[in-house]
Length: 552
Image (cartoon, rainbow, N blue to C red; front, top):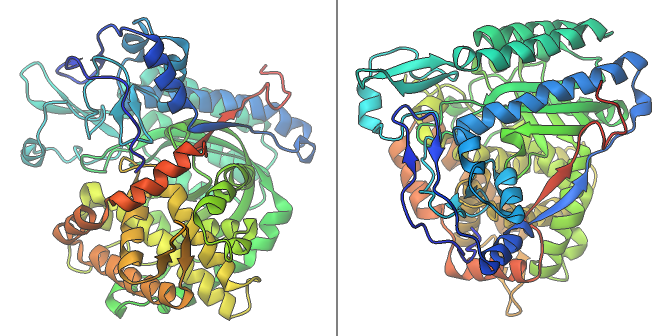
């Protein structure tokens, strides 16, 4: 990960309420030097305006759009609590404007693109469990806590008056906020002309009130003809780096590109065949992917909460519910406008700096789009249940589950590209996909170890290096060995799928500790990208004003 100079010393430990409700930082002492340092951190992000062609929407859909954005906005407040606590405690102190902006981007005083290191004076290191658990809770105490709801995706752990652990459901803790979200979703449903979207919004509105999200997940999978979409609720578990079991709130408001989506439809039918061909023993691929899996392209017009913190999502693969996946498959949403922003502003400059000049012609947007798309498709391949009665893979692998799953999706995505290219189902030179894949490793490694995607790319870079999938030239650029990359891809696929199927927590921990690191040489390359002012990620100008809409 990128080792930035840390401009702020941690001068005292942050006081935390025993129940984990808030973290109270002490007053920051500002200086011109610190302001300059924060500005350099802000320079890691490049701004991009989220827009879309609204002419594809009906009049009622245009009326729905501000309502959906308003519902998504509330996810910001819920995620602030989940990751930090009471944000008002943070903003009470005298922060200069650059620091305030950086706090807003990170949803807290920790730099998400630099291993969650604190950048505000007086703030302690971020708790691995964020604000989902009491700060003084140990893993052993959690294991001994006899409560079936402790491992729910949708509960906080807190201490009661007697000091013992207790759980609080999300819909209870956020009673006021979820009621407002529910009402907004119902209001939008009244305008919905698409029957599938109407049903989903109604069921999602109810889910916020009782934390039973499966019915709305199933309804979301059944939607086929809607143009407007909203992905909203407690969804991903990346923020919980203690156990990886607590879901954080987020929201995306989306407009479907019907033409691009039609082009992508044909790929879903190949999932069962690709599953059978995975380079691993049968026991690790015996599950059959759901047949209702969709591939669609969208413009995203609003991000909120978890997905808007630090590195921004450019593709979505949901639902995460394993039962829904086995019944219905998943939907893969490619966020076209966000993807183009990252390719033009980040990927191309990285390639010009670190990829062998004779191979730069193979860095293409089509390959970037395909690699990203099949990453999401590949989440549906492999195995969801361990083969030795350890339960779901995500439960057995605990805090390492997300990083390994992202690593699996990356490597199996490339496997899918190679197989489909051989079948003549996708166009282009296979070198385009492999070279763009290599450049993508450098892009994602910069997200740091606090990101599941960043950690997955560190593992893959080191594995590929050991297998000779690339060499480093004397001028500091990287030259891909395509034959050896194909071999390394198969070997790493087998390693990851085996770890997942066995629920091998010890083995995965060893893999992460040994290969989830940045070598000194790679660090020099990442520092070079920083010196060349190549951004790490994007921030969005977004919302009703960016779209030219009135909120009400």
